[in-house]
Amino acid sequence: MKFVLVPGSRNYKDATNRFVETAKKYFKTSIAAPFSEIKTIVDKTDRSIIYRKTNLCEFDAVYMRSSSPDISYAPIILDILVDAGVYSPIQPDAIPIAKNKFYTLKIMAEAGLPTPKSVLMTSPNIVQDVVEYFDFPVVVKLLGGMGGKGVMLVSNKSDFAPIIDAMARLNQVVAVEEFLKNPGEDHRLFVIGDQVSASMKRKCVKEGEFRANITIGGKPEKYKPTPEEEEIALKAANVIGMEICGVDLIPSENGPVLIEINDGPSLKGISTVTKFDLYDTIVKYIYDRAKS
View 1 (cartoon, helix red, strand yellow):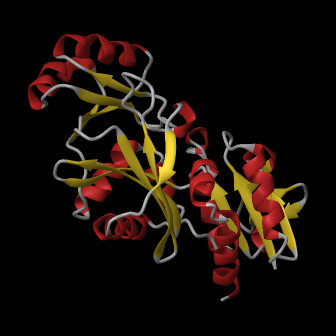
View 2 (view 1 turned 45 degrees about the horizontal axis):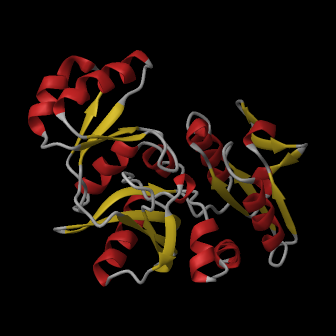
């Protein structure tokens, strides 16, 4: 059997290498094929994904861990691979949803899952209407931000219009979300198949910081999710079409609230606090599903 990992343009090389080496335990062939070296062919008689003269459509399994800059082509490549019979734990249609923070919340809210009150802003023209809709502070997010970057806390109404104006001048569409009072933490639940295989708490450690992402200094800690959190995470993964994903929740005064789903979540922090080999668990799951 043959396995290919398609790392995103912003993925870490050590994680890519770890996945490929781990997959060699289960698959006869295990390679990484970055987007920059993939040739996609579509004509009347052929739809192929070529990496160094190798047709990836002839592989048994693919695990795509795309990044936000890959959004215009990642779903197309994965769609061709899946149509060719290559097993993927992520459905092609799930990628555009996961890569857009507002789109994610829209789909999750429609499924009845708890999400923050949110507004999509494509123009500064509706600033006053948005100001009247929210109590402050509010959270402003770039739609394709990663690792907590592109997320801003706006404390008062007077600061809101200048920030939205600046984003518009940079041609950035943003999502505005209610600020959920919480103890300065969020919870990452790692879904593999029909169970939450690992979880962690991420805490803000910098004074004045409200983001708990590890890439910007958040501290990972051991955490056992509540049954309600597990139920939300599993339903979210099923709704979006991902058998492997990271689901981020914020504990609020009214219970856990879903804020994000990651199709290629980092394993660094969660592997450290759980001492659990997620690489092996993920690859073995993919192997078993592809074999069946």
